[in-house]
Length: 114
Length: 111
Image (tube, rainbow over all chains, first blue to last red):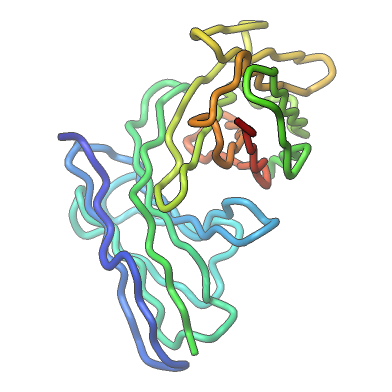
């Protein structure tokens, strides 16, 4: 089954404790992206990657890191989480080709930073 | 970058009535406009999309219209059902793969 898999689904942590949220897709997509969803703000892009070893900042990259060592994986790293990073996070992927390539989302990771 | 505005933020309709959600975008170069439905506890899922060379697209009870001159597009759901209750997001894409999303509309269909 074609899918984007994120782990964990729920995560509670404390300020300053490094964490990684994993994302994997099995559709051989070149493009991958991370979003955060906050009430009233919709989906805001954190980082994206057009291919292996190619990453770029989205609209809200501060406090986050990503890596793209393999085509299928795109982990999101919070080196020193803070309470304002409490949010619902989504990973997404798509092919690159035409303008109407469909974006597929994972099920989300609810992060709480205390 | 692109700025997408979405209205209303919440919408309640009686079952069987129609629902309309409207979005505007700022970048005239945007050429792809998808709509996503997010059910509780799930990620957004694409329900319909439209390209800039098309004015209207329909899929059963849902339709999307695009007015390039005015830079706005709308989602229309007819004969609403309780399972249509969800959060809906519009989005716009300019050239490359990045999608810019609206702030979402929470639709509630009252049985």
